[in-house]
Image (cartoon, rainbow, N blue to C red; front, side, top):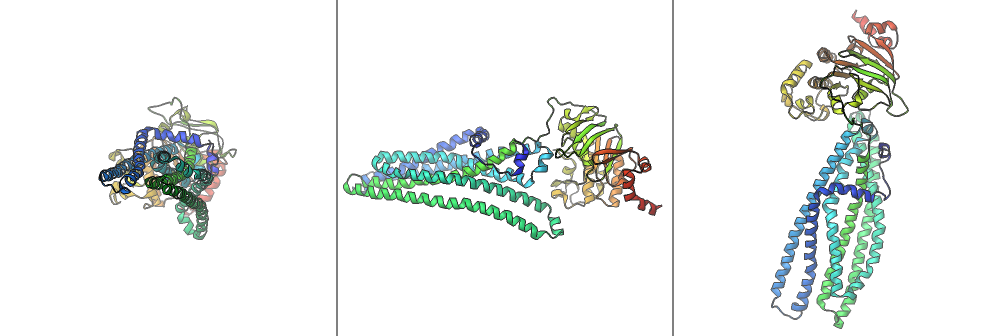
Length: 597
């Protein structure tokens, strides 16, 4: 199943998946079958205690109360109390086992979904809203937890109770039992009709929740822009539309729910009326004891209770089925950058980078790169410039294998990067992006990403080399200062410095800087420029920038235009050519240099 089918509408229809989904859910249930067995046995034992109760009352009425006999009556009462106590104990064990089962399966499934999301290529995340993926990992899996904890085992108990009551009623009086069961065809017809309606309704509800989460994530992430452009009313209107759509879908399921259970109660009342009418006549005729009539009334009450429970469990099952369809559709998505069958490993690399006839498109057939041929020697400092959309950032995405080329190859030290494991490849490439992502956590953990026990000595050395030691030491707690999500308490320049410290701590052989100083003030840019001289020393460096002041002293400048390399040379050589680079220079620095001179 490809990602586009997952992305387009996220609504799955049909019943063809039922058996397959059950088998796949069983995979996550199988390690905990012992808890299923424990829950089933304790629930059956609880049902047995409940089934025995009306019969003991029947014996008490016929053998003790009506004859006015008290000898042995207290033993019967003690037995009844023992059954109630046993039912309490067995139900406690069943509830604990079932909920433990639900929590464990939910834990395993949520971990599987998150692990799968981490393996997907960036192309998948380009196409799918984050809010929808959050829904899959949270609320959809929570619905499955309800299936495992309150639905799966209790269904077995409810069925055991139903058939047990039918057997007990038939044993007490077959004719009255058959007359009572005559209402079952009506019950089955109503159940099958509402089953289909409820399934469609629950599927719509899950889809609408995903849409709300997707929009909510987008709106909250862009709240500053919404407020800046006074788009609050428009944003509210869009959310109101999605919220109303969700409410309508939910109200539809509530309508079926509200109709179904009163109809069950009506049928239950009809069954009770049949027992009172026919059973009462038989009692007056002497063909039936009063105790049997009392037992039948209690059994009928208990008979329709598990039927109502089964209907509710069916609703849980339908919601779980709708959620599992979406979860397994996500797990079936295979937009994955493949690992090599036998990965190549190198203890040391020189850092030579080669692009050979590279073609690439984010959305075919619209090519972003068109036949790129580029070679960067070990330790060489190369800058790539060009207008927005020229393909500069795509170079980084391909070098780090966030995407794979449609044609051509990229090599490091003469070896195709597809032959390296992705983990090894990315360990040897340091990237500092314009949009710095800061994780919630301490400063030191943000610098030493991925290390359980980071080296404080290396962290301090990295920060000192990058020129960020002073501002970090001035933070409350210093390196142990807790940063908020995305580092919003830091300035843009401070976030850039932390991203540089990350690269310095990683100490890669190949360095890529993508617009790394385009959003900082002059003072911070000066600090970064000084740090870059140390950072790029001895490393193969590819610098992508619009601000030409950051690249004038590199070994070579590559100019890209519409996905192609159009000019190559030093700063002075490109100015003398009078081409695209010259025009960029004219726009940015001619007036400034004239003023300075």
